[in-house]
Image: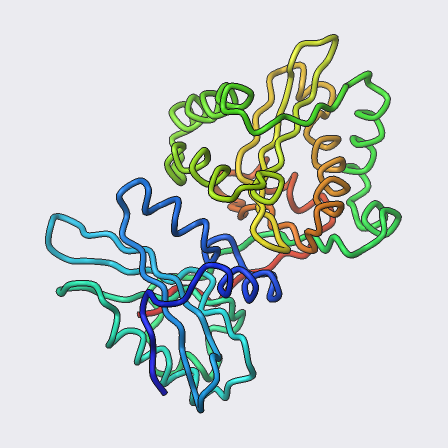
Length: 306
């Protein structure tokens, strides 16, 4: 086994990532966009018995100019069947060979569901698992609608009758920066954090065809914008990234209609899975109930390991 660091080209990475429906955090554009903000990124190609069997993208930060933390989120991407023992060897070798200056720690938050997965036996769990809701967009519209909770579906019906107009927003920054400013205000008022908002514009423009990187839908009522949703596309999957609504938007259940319309828009672009961007039933109970009620599958990952 050997590992090549920062040698693979983006076409090869993108092809493998799309075939697997990989998470946004393992998308080439995700790393490139963070690098544009001055954040270190390293990409590994793992070769076993002459075949590329895995890819892993690490986002690296240094704290207090001392200890470095390299995080491989929702990876590695396993391109071939690999035994649990070999996966455990690959984790160890990725940690050992990571080209980030020491002192540093390499952490993994893999796609595995079971924290006792044999591939993780040589690692120590340091954080519990992240939960999210996944929507299977290969289903028919009838199947998607049938999977919704009754109250969620009733709110969708009410939104469809409310006179809301759903508009697709273009990739010109002037068309969506207002939404990022609304998100900035939401973060300040509710004391929650996320990726730097500058990341969004960088990500949207990371590919020549912006239809392959983003979808932004805006809800209008009598030509006044009342709600919006921003989705980031990564290969054959997408992630819900930003949502905003004012009082009129909440009164008309605009987010239900926006998400429903997004299902069709994303499916037309070849997206097979929509990740609703995480749930936290303690601190963000309302948003979490909205996501769960949409009819997707609730998934809790194994956790973060060192």
